[in-house]
Image (tube, rainbow, N blue to C red; front, side, top):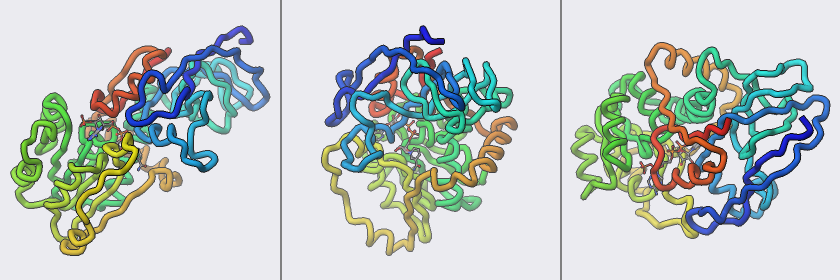
Length: 336
Ligand SMILES: NC(=O)c1ccc[n+]([C@@H]2O[C@H](COP(=O)([O-])OP(=O)(O)OC[C@H]3O[C@@H](n4cnc5c(N)ncnc54)[C@H](OP(=O)(O)O)[C@@H]3O)[C@@H](O)[C@H]2O)c1
């Protein structure tokens, strides 16, 4: 395997605002020698995720930023070509933080084998991966939905959003999704059976449109985007409503966070509960949640919505597209 030339995408320049092509550079390197306990894999699917934008900034703390001129690390599914560990064999599919490169040599203990008999490899980056787990814990553990609750989801047609809405429907909730195109709204209504969906880009008055879509007010708000969309939802909260703060993508490319209305009086008036979370806090419960998600998937209760870009060199574009609303469901890049 010594002769393999590896193409890698490195962070060339820290972006200001929306990253551009100049933020990244493709380099070619020789693969280093494999050591005992390591595996060599050919990467097959690369996950691009909004959180990576934050890692491109200089956070000033070691380990929180992607280093400049080094390969961008992120969730990846690869196929084992050579194994220096008895637990893995050639041909196994593995999930790990390999990153934006065609081949990776990684310690065997840092990857997990995935069962491609249950679902296709890319599903382990979406519905059965961190995406599905984020939706599962962010909705069920943080927002504690009850039958009949009105749930509103921002970023509803994205990776996490599509999963949240479907899980909320399983739990007997009424679901309204907010998304950025008519095509996304149609998918939410017709393919994923959301009760209501609103195109925020076309809405002349989002508060009015939300009032029409949720005449009984909002019991649960699952927030993926923040900003003015969230301001609008907050004005419709019911008593004892729960707000799960998953992400704030509308703020990720801003140099200075936008100012909004003061929300404490709203929270107080409605005795609402608002909590942010990180999915990694639930690691010990991943196996049981994955089992449940896999059962729902097998039983046809949830659909895995994936948006696949082809080609290694298109990884940066797929990533930048997340901030332009170009994806429907989980964006992954197939590179092999
Ligand atoms: N807490 C956690 O542990 C955790 C874990 C995973 C992800 N997250 C967060 O969850 C959120 C969703 O992540 P994801 O992986 O599912 O991404 P995603 O929703 O698949 O992709 C991004 C989507 O966000 C929307 N968007 C982009 N810029 C926007 C803006 N300025 N205003 C409104 N909407 C905008 C776009 O859809 P439209 O066309 O609808 O605008 C876009 O398609 C992100 O904020 C992410 O950081 C949190």
